[in-house]
Amino acid sequence: MGAIFRREIGAYFTSSVAYIFLAVFWIFSGFFFFQSCLSLATTDMSALFQSMFLICIFVIPLLTMRSFSEEKKQKTEQGLLTAPVSLGEIVFGKYFAALVLYTIALVMPLIYALILSFFGTVEWGIVFANFLAMFLLGAAFIAVGTLISALTENQIAAAVLSFVALMALYMIDVINSYINISFINTILEKLSFYRRYYAITCGLFNVSTIVFYISVAVIFNYFTIRVFERRRWS
Amino acid sequence: MIEVRNLTKHYGDKHAVNDISFTVEDGEILGFLGPNGAGKSTTMNMLTGYISSTSGQALINGVDILEDPIKAKSFIGYLPELPPLYLDMTVKGYLNYIFDLKKCKLPRKAHLKEVMDLTKITDVQERLIKNLSKGYKQRVGLAQALVNNPPVLILDEPTVGLDPKQILEIRTLIKKLGRNHTVILSSHILSEIQAVCDRIIIINHGVVAAHDTTDNLSKNVSTDHRIIARIEGPKDEIVRALRDIDGIKYVKADMEREPGVYEYELEAVPGTDIRRDLFEIARRHDWPLLACRSAEMTLEDVFLKITMGEGIVIPNAEDQADAKKGEKA
Image (cartoon, rainbow over all chains, first blue to last red; front, side, top):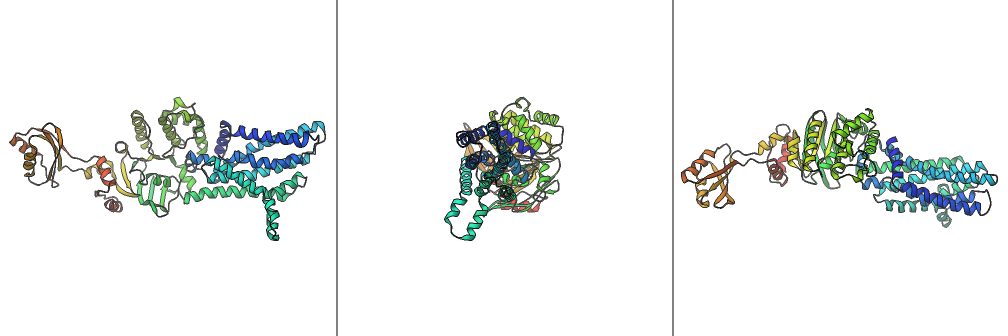
């Protein structure tokens, strides 16, 4: 797994993907930081963290679009799949590389909090809880994007489909509001990505949220492994 | 050692590979010959665990590729049809990555140097793979297969895209590697297989059409009772005279090679030597006999005959089942 992880990280930085991803992430988070904190002269970062959810939907597909689609297109996946490594090592090697790059991007909101702390009191507990929530949200989203990238050999298709999928997860609440069947409402409420995330930005931290996001990540990575197993057997 | 037992791959109704069996001993080089789409790559992909078989078994050093894929794969160095190269890496970086990927325990620097020297890519080690010529890329592909010194090498058309000098070098290298590795090599270049391999499997439409040692394969189909003679003189008279030879089956005048000189194809019943009679006729009629050679089939002819479905029966004491398939094909 280490070899694949290191190669992925290297590939992110030798191609322009890492730089574009970090630039887009930091530009948008910077804009929201200015809009919701600096221009209002407040140390309450909840509005910033709420908008980070949307930023993730836009930038995570950039991170995952080439994971497996490019391997398939360049026929390098044949080298991976015939190497003495398990499918799990391949999938998680790539997954963790994307997750690490995402975590690097998350350092910026912490720096914003640091900047605010010079001018006022920052609720560090809430900031760190939000940081954790963003990390977990990204961990789940990256797993979704990785799966989609394993399904196509076209990077653009992978990016667009991932964006649509993440958008759909975001809109679970909107869809829910149009449905009037109580048990479906309950299920969709439990599945809502945004509801859990929003609760944390308001300072309501819950262990079930951690379990929820990690489960999503594990399940989608498992699906990715199954995609490769299935392809081999087809 | 590689053992393949009744290996079969279906894609829906299409039989890509149908019931192939063979064994490759340690230190043996097996050639896999067949036209494009015959099932060579599919078979190799099954052997290396890239795709699974529909039925049948492939054992690498006694380990079933489907039961313990990681262990079986660790015995194999595989060069696919398209080398799995990351274009954005340098040659050295890529081989280091492969070294880690294969969890190689050998001393890193010395081993990678050895592999690069063997494949003659040491002088391009700092260059990005995307800037290399096709020949160099192919050699980097071969180098990655050699990393970790696997006992089994599976090479899918290793000399594609190389110039004649490089082809010769790679062939020499493969022969050298064949001494202490088990090698399967696929190609549709016959001279290559003939030069490198101990044994040949001709595969066509997903079945084994012929399976024998390189020497036997050309010997079995060679026909010493077939002669091609180049004679100067009147064509029709010569044909008539040649038809009178004892035991002759047919005589055919080929095209005019030189002014007034034709080539004649003669075939006698097997076991008859007609060379002396031929000379005698030429002498008697004062027709200069300019050339005479046995119409021995080259491996090229064998291959074409088998794959064009002309049906050559190749006796195969080792493997009756394969011979039956040969007849069918």
